[in-house]
Length: 309
Image (cartoon, rainbow, N blue to C red; front, side, top):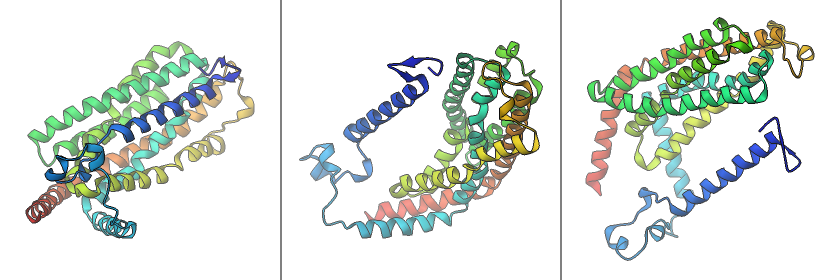
């Protein structure tokens, strides 16, 4: 849509508006139809009220009590070694995903037009979507065979694969328009293999070491840590490209791009992808020792809580 105008507006603005409308629609549907199982009342009340009515909290519950309880749970979970490891790997693991926002600009500097660049990015996104799905399936099967290590192995494999694919994408493939199909194939395979961590490991591991009552809050806390820390990646790519590798925006042809600037940007991207991918894979290693112990502790605590009900 970037190369066209719709109703007098640039296509990229229309794309943002469409995504915003779809997001609002999804939020409304979730609010309207999704039932939170944590808030369901007992069987006696369930026979008299609908699911939506069961979600209404007791008016006597004070917000201060909820916040204090959440704060206590957050402090407790932050002491869990497995949680610390996942947050640590996420701090560096999110850096390449933040830096990769420059990939569209990089393709256009090589000389691809808007449509070709968008298609390549779309192919990468499709690979990531399929990779997340199949990565979860593979990790489920691996966890059945290796209960305490299967998911960790999947995460390390996925993070490590970012290194050779980044090198091949940014340094080996000739930065020419004629390499379109090579880029497309590489991006799809790269997206398919580097997108496993969240569905294969992080989410399932959190589900086993975090109390169900506070699971959503802990997920949000993890995302806050990771995204806030990784936000510096994009500016650093720009600084590296300009100050070290010689990127000059004034030398870029708006239509044909610039091979020299494309090379400079690719080097900046490479620095912010290869090293973080390697560190992310390395930082998963402590889970081989912490996950088993923390999972058993969580199971015992959950069993005791169930007995008290």
